Image 1 (cartoon, rainbow, N blue to C red):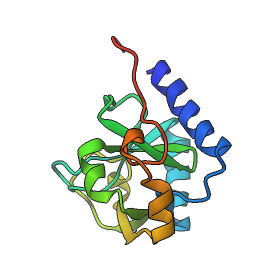
Image 2 (image 1 turned 45 degrees about the vertical axis):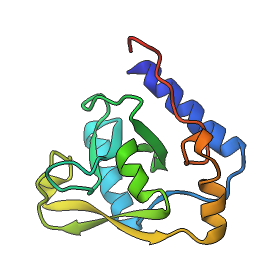
Image 3 (image 1 turned 180 degrees about the vertical axis):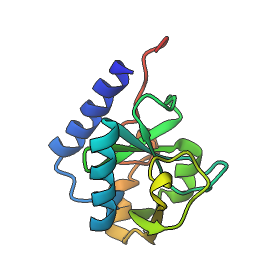
Image 4 (image 1 turned 90 degrees about the vertical axis):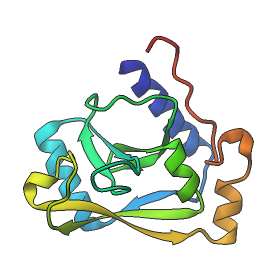
Length: 156
Protein backbone atom coordinates (compact mmCIF):
# COMPACT_ATOMS: atom_id res chain seq x y z
CA UNK A 1 0.00 0.00 0.00
CA UNK A 2 2.96 2.33 0.57
CA UNK A 3 3.74 2.45 -3.16
CA UNK A 4 0.11 3.38 -3.84
CA UNK A 5 0.36 6.29 -1.39
CA UNK A 6 3.53 7.56 -3.04
CA UNK A 7 1.87 7.52 -6.47
CA UNK A 8 -1.28 9.17 -5.13
CA UNK A 9 0.77 11.95 -3.59
CA UNK A 10 2.65 12.38 -6.88
CA UNK A 11 -0.58 12.76 -8.84
CA UNK A 12 -1.99 15.30 -6.39
CA UNK A 13 1.24 17.29 -6.47
CA UNK A 14 1.25 17.05 -10.26
CA UNK A 15 -2.27 18.45 -10.33
CA UNK A 16 -1.31 21.38 -8.12
CA UNK A 17 1.89 22.09 -10.04
CA UNK A 18 -0.11 22.38 -13.27
CA UNK A 19 -2.18 25.13 -11.60
CA UNK A 20 -5.50 23.58 -12.61
CA UNK A 21 -8.32 25.86 -11.60
CA UNK A 22 -11.03 23.22 -11.92
CA UNK A 23 -11.87 20.33 -9.67
CA UNK A 24 -13.92 17.19 -10.15
CA UNK A 25 -14.93 16.72 -6.55
CA UNK A 26 -15.71 18.99 -3.57
CA UNK A 27 -17.15 18.58 -0.09
CA UNK A 28 -19.68 20.50 2.00
CA UNK A 29 -18.81 21.98 5.40
CA UNK A 30 -21.11 19.49 7.17
CA UNK A 31 -19.43 16.55 5.43
CA UNK A 32 -15.98 17.98 6.28
CA UNK A 33 -16.84 17.85 9.97
CA UNK A 34 -17.78 14.17 9.72
CA UNK A 35 -14.56 13.40 7.83
CA UNK A 36 -12.53 15.14 10.55
CA UNK A 37 -14.35 13.12 13.22
CA UNK A 38 -13.69 9.86 11.36
CA UNK A 39 -10.02 10.71 10.76
CA UNK A 40 -9.58 11.38 14.48
CA UNK A 41 -11.03 7.97 15.30
CA UNK A 42 -9.63 5.80 12.48
CA UNK A 43 -6.55 7.56 11.09
CA UNK A 44 -5.82 7.57 7.35
CA UNK A 45 -8.90 7.14 5.18
CA UNK A 46 -9.98 6.92 1.54
CA UNK A 47 -13.20 7.72 -0.26
CA UNK A 48 -14.31 5.27 -2.93
CA UNK A 49 -17.28 5.50 -5.28
CA UNK A 50 -17.84 2.25 -7.15
CA UNK A 51 -21.42 2.14 -8.38
CA UNK A 52 -21.64 -1.45 -7.20
CA UNK A 53 -23.85 -3.09 -4.61
CA UNK A 54 -25.24 -1.71 -1.36
CA UNK A 55 -25.75 2.05 -1.72
CA UNK A 56 -24.91 2.04 -5.43
CA UNK A 57 -22.98 5.14 -6.41
CA UNK A 58 -22.88 6.65 -2.91
CA UNK A 59 -19.32 7.40 -1.79
CA UNK A 60 -17.92 5.20 0.95
CA UNK A 61 -15.22 6.26 3.37
CA UNK A 62 -12.96 3.46 4.54
CA UNK A 63 -9.76 3.03 6.48
CA UNK A 64 -6.83 3.23 4.11
CA UNK A 65 -5.76 -0.31 3.27
CA UNK A 66 -9.20 -1.85 3.89
CA UNK A 67 -10.03 -1.81 0.19
CA UNK A 68 -7.87 -3.15 -2.58
CA UNK A 69 -7.22 -0.43 -5.15
CA UNK A 70 -5.81 -1.21 -8.57
CA UNK A 71 -5.41 0.42 -11.97
CA UNK A 72 -9.19 0.33 -12.48
CA UNK A 73 -9.52 2.98 -9.74
CA UNK A 74 -9.00 6.62 -10.66
CA UNK A 75 -7.92 9.30 -8.21
CA UNK A 76 -10.30 12.24 -8.73
CA UNK A 77 -8.95 14.51 -6.03
CA UNK A 78 -8.51 14.95 -2.32
CA UNK A 79 -11.07 16.10 0.25
CA UNK A 80 -9.87 17.13 3.71
CA UNK A 81 -6.66 15.18 3.13
CA UNK A 82 -8.57 12.06 2.03
CA UNK A 83 -8.00 10.71 -1.47
CA UNK A 84 -11.21 10.27 -3.50
CA UNK A 85 -11.21 7.34 -5.92
CA UNK A 86 -13.75 6.15 -8.44
CA UNK A 87 -13.83 2.95 -10.43
CA UNK A 88 -12.94 3.58 -14.09
CA UNK A 89 -16.23 2.10 -15.37
CA UNK A 90 -18.23 4.32 -13.03
CA UNK A 91 -16.13 7.31 -14.07
CA UNK A 92 -17.30 6.91 -17.66
CA UNK A 93 -20.81 7.82 -16.45
CA UNK A 94 -19.68 10.70 -14.22
CA UNK A 95 -16.80 12.26 -16.19
CA UNK A 96 -18.89 15.23 -17.34
CA UNK A 97 -20.09 16.12 -13.83
CA UNK A 98 -18.79 17.97 -10.81
CA UNK A 99 -19.44 15.98 -7.64
CA UNK A 100 -20.03 17.46 -4.20
CA UNK A 101 -19.90 15.09 -1.24
CA UNK A 102 -22.48 15.87 1.42
CA UNK A 103 -23.82 14.13 4.52
CA UNK A 104 -27.40 13.29 5.46
CA UNK A 105 -29.15 11.56 8.32
CA UNK A 106 -30.15 7.97 7.84
CA UNK A 107 -28.41 4.65 7.67
CA UNK A 108 -27.04 3.49 4.38
CA UNK A 109 -26.45 -0.14 3.53
CA UNK A 110 -22.71 -0.06 2.96
CA UNK A 111 -19.55 -0.65 4.95
CA UNK A 112 -18.75 3.06 5.10
CA UNK A 113 -17.42 4.30 8.45
CA UNK A 114 -20.09 6.99 8.97
CA UNK A 115 -22.97 4.46 8.98
CA UNK A 116 -22.77 3.69 12.75
CA UNK A 117 -23.19 7.44 13.38
CA UNK A 118 -26.65 7.29 11.79
CA UNK A 119 -25.33 9.27 8.82
CA UNK A 120 -24.39 8.57 5.24
CA UNK A 121 -22.44 10.36 2.56
CA UNK A 122 -24.33 11.36 -0.58
CA UNK A 123 -23.42 13.03 -3.86
CA UNK A 124 -24.82 16.21 -5.37
CA UNK A 125 -23.84 16.58 -8.99
CA UNK A 126 -24.01 19.12 -11.76
CA UNK A 127 -22.82 19.06 -15.35
CA UNK A 128 -19.53 20.77 -16.03
CA UNK A 129 -19.60 24.08 -17.85
CA UNK A 130 -18.18 23.95 -21.36
CA UNK A 131 -14.96 25.50 -20.05
CA UNK A 132 -14.63 22.96 -17.22
CA UNK A 133 -15.44 20.07 -19.53
CA UNK A 134 -12.87 21.22 -22.07
CA UNK A 135 -10.15 21.53 -19.41
CA UNK A 136 -10.91 18.33 -17.51
CA UNK A 137 -11.87 16.00 -20.35
CA UNK A 138 -9.36 17.19 -22.89
CA UNK A 139 -8.01 13.90 -24.24
CA UNK A 140 -8.58 10.18 -24.22
CA UNK A 141 -4.77 9.83 -23.91
CA UNK A 142 -4.92 10.99 -20.31
CA UNK A 143 -7.95 8.84 -19.41
CA UNK A 144 -10.37 11.76 -19.72
CA UNK A 145 -9.50 13.11 -16.29
CA UNK A 146 -7.13 15.96 -16.99
CA UNK A 147 -3.99 14.09 -15.91
CA UNK A 148 -2.31 10.77 -16.51
CA UNK A 149 -3.90 7.80 -14.78
CA UNK A 150 -2.00 5.94 -12.13
CA UNK A 151 -0.03 2.90 -13.20
CA UNK A 152 0.59 0.60 -10.26
CA UNK A 153 3.87 -1.34 -10.37
CA UNK A 154 3.33 -5.06 -11.07
CA UNK A 155 3.24 -7.25 -8.01
CA UNK A 156 1.96 -4.51 -5.71
